[in-house]
Image (cartoon, rainbow, N blue to C red; front, top):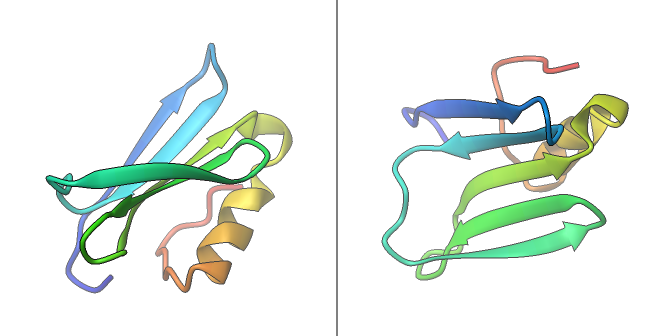
Length: 79
């Protein structure tokens, strides 16, 4: 993850937070890895491009847990 940019998008009305890493891959696929947590990966490399959390306000800690599980070093605390 070193040298990659991070973008954070939050939709307050829908209470959806998405963190993306680097440029959008040309070939991506998303999967729900647990209830309300979506991970988007580069299909060719398997590298994680983004993580989205539905119902973020009530369960913001899930983002940190998922990043840790996926071995993503994120420089900010979001909760």
